[in-house]
Length: 209
Length: 267
Image (cartoon, rainbow over all chains, first blue to last red; front, side, top):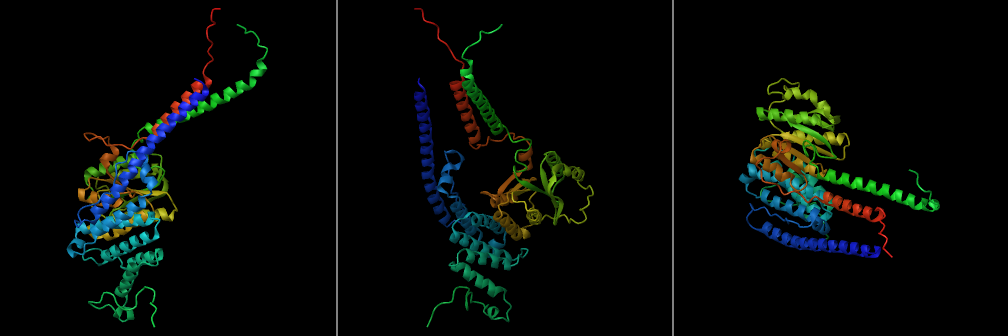
């Protein structure tokens, strides 16, 4: 065979290999779309004990499809929110128990990982806000070694810094200010039973008459 | 035997040099591909992955009373192996409080003087009076984090050797500490000393998806026996090196093969 023919055979072989690889990667991409939908449905289920998976057994090596899709930050955020939902039940006996505290540890680590990896500032702010809520829970749950509730202030402030439009974090920050303010101050006097949120908030002042 | 001098030898000097350069380059590439294939194929040393590769690890060892006699022997063996690893590391000893025994970057051989304290339980040690016997894992992790930050080690990691029997009351601080590790992308490798499934599950869940790993000391130091075969990751480096090797050999044969002369046909 002539040199030209050798080159053509070589190039054809490389093209066939690349085509096979692309087909496998495309199949994995389709699997990921299904897995995200399936995991979201599992996460939205009412059963809090179910841990959604959002996983795919990829055929292509080294997670090529996952890398191409760039879903790492989406997955990290989803895992963080799912763990938060399982850890923050609002049931005092569960929150103070071993399972509740273990889930909070896992949720806090996962949310911190989501904040670090997320390129979407709005979503990172939401994760910061949820992390702040867990810190508040840690510091108020009976029986535990108390962590300073002021740490939550940093989380909520970080959330607002990341996304100045995030209302939940602003409300939570205002509540923490009210909780931590001395009773003889204007903020502290707002802390009354049955009024969880009142008075001046941390949001931008409204425009009136 | 003397050869018959060839009159046009000068005309072949350049092709000869070109062939020599190509031969040397191909030989070097072949040797490189072979070396990559060998490195990719071999198992990872004496203790595969006990010390994370390419990181500046701080090893934190649990000295609380919940660590059993058997575990002391395991710790001694592990420390002995780490001391012979030739790496640089830091050492934290902890119980209810944490103590910086060796700063990060210390030669691993400096661990040898500590081996005598793990020869058997009850051996007096300099920090025994300060430790009350409880377990506060977060205090050890927090100290290791501070050591890495103080020494400006950007690619640090922490290896925690513990039975993971942490006080449930300290979980709030543990959560905060693990979150701070996640924020700074510092991986934690936990070597469990016979932990309960609940304790191991807590740390596995917290370190899942990029935070680190949890193994038992038996997994990390002994060859697996009577265990189902694990599905290993696709050996990309080995396959690429193998393909490169085959292509280079083909190229070598194609370009540098000995000249062959056909038989003279009878006229």
